[in-house]
Image 1 (tube, rainbow, N blue to C red):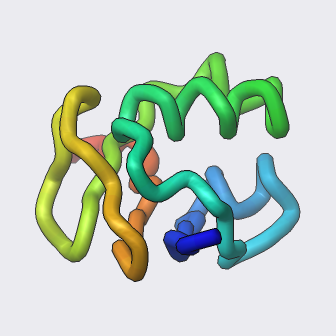
Image 2: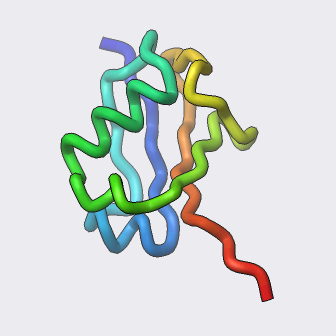
Length: 79
């Protein structure tokens, strides 16, 4: 099955316990990916996470394709 690569940054990496993993979710949407990740890592539900696909911010309806690289980006605080 075709794979996508998921990268976790900063606090999200601490919640998942991993920096990178490969998942077989091509053909799904970013929103469906988020649902799957919350099932796997329930603590992500409390975070307001931004998703980027191939280095561009992505909306929940965006479709994922084999070979895509998805980054989960934690909220950025200003100062």
